[in-house]
Amino acid sequence: MIILDTNIISELMKTSPNQHVIAWLDQQDPMTLFTTSISIAEIIYGLDVLPAGKRRDYLEVAFNQVLIDAFKHRILMFDEHAAHVYGKLMGRRKITGRPLSVLDGQIAAIAKTNQMSLATRNTRDFFDCELNVIDPFDTHSTSGIA
Image 1 (cartoon, one colour):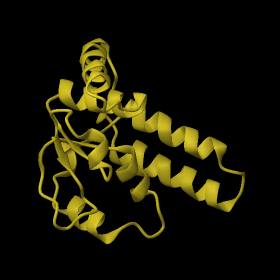
Image 2: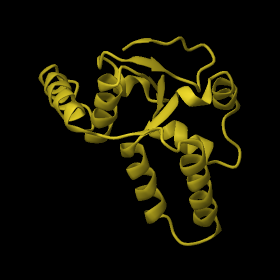
Image 3: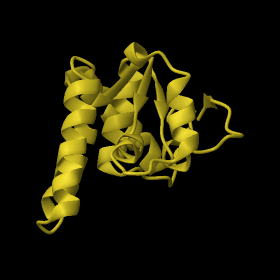
Image 4: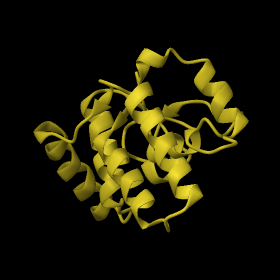
């Protein structure tokens, strides 16, 4: 089971997505791929601040196709258990001098709570989160605990 980070979801919305990402996704069982309510919020925010026009219209349609069609019933929420994991993770990262953004911390907590891997381009952001992190953009990437 793999959670797709925001940057993977947004890649799928592009007119010409990265071919390494597409090839990696083609190797996965679609029913093992999930995303989070946090990624949805990030993408909706990004769409909302875009100026009105063809690009925004296209991306809004793509967003609905990717999320509504492809991830129906596979969107994980930031719940009470994830909140506890988040608090400990964020505290540990701050104490060790490697703070994590709020949104990345929430995504990491959801992945950890559900014992899932995380597919992201930003592998460094999730270093030391005790997650199996995968970079679909990198053809030489091997998954591993970060």
